[in-house]
Structures are given as C-alpha cells and as structure tokens.
Length: 607
Image (cartoon, rainbow, N blue to C red):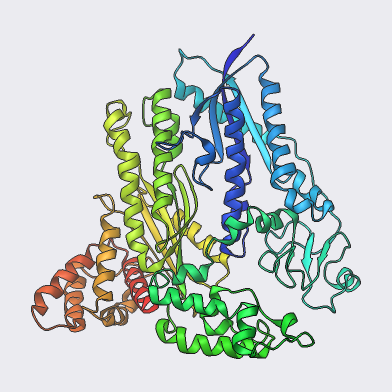
C-alpha cells in the first residue's frame, strides 16, 4: 500500500570536511563536492515526484542543476510516497554513494586504484522517515523527525577503517598519504618508504610530472590522502579559477585598469616562448637548464617580493627578470601593504526553533516559505560577494562562508545583514507575525570575522572566524558580530558588537569611522593615546571604574587633537566622538578599545 512519509536526508561530515584546507581552493572544493552531492539527492528525489520542502529553490530557478554552485544545503526534507519506505531510503543512499565513488571520485582512483578504499566510507549518509498525516500539525511532525534522525546518528553502525602505519595526510591528518610528489630526484620510493611515508601503498609523482598532476594540485614534498586529493582534482577548471588569499587581499587593486595591464605583462614572464624571445635573444637552449628549470606557473603571490626566491625560480635569468619587474612595476604601485584579507562566517540565530515551529504556529506552507526566503537570501548573498568585494565559498540557507577584501569589509557586512532583513525576516514578519507564539521575534544572524595575513595558515584563520561567531552568539540577544585581527607580530585583537536595533546600525557606524580615517580627516593617534591613558585602568573584567561621561569627554579632546583640518574643528570632532561612543556597549571598555585598535590596524594595512 502506497503511503506518504515525511523524509529527512543528510550527510556527514560537513564543516570538518570543508575546513580541512591549506589554501582557499581547498575550501571551495570541499564546499563544491558537498553541494554537488546534495544536488544529486535533490535530483533523485525529484525523479520519484517527491514534494521537496527544504530547501526550496530561489526565485526564477526551476532546475537544481542551474542553482549556484556550492549553494546546496547539507540536508533535504521532503514528502515521499512509497509502499516500501526502507527500500526507498536504502536505494537512495546506495545511489548517492555510487555516484560519489564512480563519478565524482573517479579522477582520484583512476590515477591510483588503491586509493578507492579510503573513499568508500568517508561520507556517511543518514536518513529517517515517519508516516505523514496531513491532519496533524506539520511542524510537530517535523520536530519528531529531527529527534528520530538524532537517534539514527547515535545508533548507526560504525564501520572502522583500518590502515597500516604511515605518514598522515597534510590536509586532514587522519588518513594515510596516497599521493606524494618528490621534492627532488634523489627522493626514491625506497628512501621514502624507509624514512618518510613508512609504507609502500602510495603513488609517487615525479617532480616534473606537470601534465597529469600539476604542482597546484600536488606541491613538491606534499602528501595527500585520497579524499584530500579529490579536492585538488575535482572540477579542476572551477577550482583553479577560485582566487588565492593573496588575490583576495589585492582584489580591490586588481580592478584598476593600469594594474590589470601590469598583471598581464607580469604573466608573460612565465611563458617560455615569450621569455625565450625577449630575454634570451630567441636562442635555443636544448642542452641547457632552461626547459627544465623554467617556472611556468604564475602565482599572484609573486606580487610580493618575499615569494620570489631561488627555490621557486631556479633558472637565474628568469629570477632576475621577475625580481626587476616586481620592483619597478609592482612595488611602487602597491607598496608593502595589501597583504591582509578577511573571512566571514555566519548562520541564523535560533534557526532550529524557527524551523520546528517553536516561535511560530506554522504549517507546511510556512515551512516552504521560510525555506524559499533562506534560499533567495543565500543566492543573493553569494551574488553580492563577487570581485572586487571578495568571493563566497559556501551559501546554503542561513549558513554562509566567504572571503572578503578588507577594503570592503564593513560595506559587505552591512549589505549582508540588510539583505537578510529584506529577504528573510521581513517576508516572514509580514506574512506570519499574527501566528508568532512569543511576542516580538525577529530572524537574525550572528557572524564571525577573522582578518589574517595571506601567508597565515588558513586553518588558523578559519578557526578564529568560527570562534568569533560563537562569541557573537553568546551575546544575550545574539544578532551580533565578532571580529579578530591576527597581527603579524603575533598579537591578537578581538571584539564583539551587536548589529544594533536598526538592522545593521553598528556595522554602518564602523563603516563611517573607517571612511573618515581613510580620508585622513582624523589621524589614528587618538586611538594610540586612548590606549596609553586608559589601558592600566582596565580591571580583569575588561571594565574601568570611570563614568561614561568622563570617557566621552577625554575622547572628544583626543579626537580634536587628531583632527587634520582647522575649520569647525570642535564641532566636527565632537560629531566624530558622538559616532564612536555609540560602539561603547555596556561596561566592557576593553572590548571598545580593541574595536578601535582593529580600526587602527585596518587603516595601516589597507593604505
């Protein structure tokens, strides 16, 4: 007998898998793999005429395949009709696993068949279902289904994956190395087995094997497991085009036509034919080191002189040419700045409660409406974070992860927060406010932001963004953002602010403060002096035993001294102080001081 079931399908791991990365392309690839897997689930369910509840596709999107890459959520809720629910779920799980192994992961095991075993049980697929009764409250049934899924995860039979001892993957540190590139020709398999890899089950990639496996996919002396190597070879054209952290840091400058032209000229120094014709008098060097040692892999990091080394440019003529070009054509334009970028991460506040009906007496239409609003938001959020502002890594429902050029950081933060208001909160307020269970509720999100040097380990910047998001969610009403600046000296400045009552009020204030400092209306000396005068008065709780009015009075005096103009100095200085003091929330003076220190750091590293 055919019956209706409420069906929930999800995948694991998600965040841990995405975060296992050494460079930005690894992050994007991890997100893309998960997104494509869940799009396959969506497609398979559509073939059965299932009624998809979550996620809903964005407006104007009729086909899941046309949905923005890396935007699918990691769970799907649907109503399915079947006479054998267990067989339905098992078949779907089998089809997804087979698609992953035989199609998506084929570029890995086709190079080294032994790598397939590592891939077989990496992802876990969980699903549960309960008979659906249209006369019962839909959200109550969904809440029960969520509890069932939790039970399934806890009771799922664990299949241990055992490997012999060996060197672990450079990305995840869990699985043995299956792909390793020589650092030089002296590294033979025998030596590696004995002193570096510690087992013989791996593919040794020759140092000069650039056609089959490029050095972008596998660097010299780098060892990767099968699942990590998949990140390097999956949809390689899309992954290759994703900007590195150095490019994110330079993105605002690279929009300049002059610098675009400079970049194109710079790239020519990595073309053999061009270099041979213009620097070697078109001589043939068949018996020389030219073809062997020439560096054909342009990297945006070469905009910075510290990356132009003998090791990366063993062909001396090219080394000198690249050094000279960087000094004369690039360094004079960008100086020593523009080496920092930002990671922004956020998700919706109390989203489980909104979806389960704890805040709203909703039905299936409410569930679909909220899902559609979240999908519209994620699509538009991803669209707004494009060059020169940055690049989205993941935008699925209320979850977002992206790189931001710090020149545009507070503009992007303001836009995203306002977008969430117009695309998610306002439509739900307008349509369902009368059904709210508990007073004046609003859909909001909390964000974590880390500002890091392009050479900082990506995992550290990622972890800090996550930590600052957690700190933001600890605020009483959430709806906040936390920022950390990871300084080159090793010093760390961090602060947490609410977005404010007027949607993105405090983010907009920060944007205005930065603009005034950028325009050199005021120097940042008032921040230095404020630190000098008050830092010793801060107690262990981050507070000072001074009235707020006294702090404000001294702030006005210091800002007036830092003003770079004469007309209306007192009035304009007071106006600037009025703006800044609004960010002094509660009694936490250290939080306020750290915020100003981040503004000072921001100005120094973007100019």
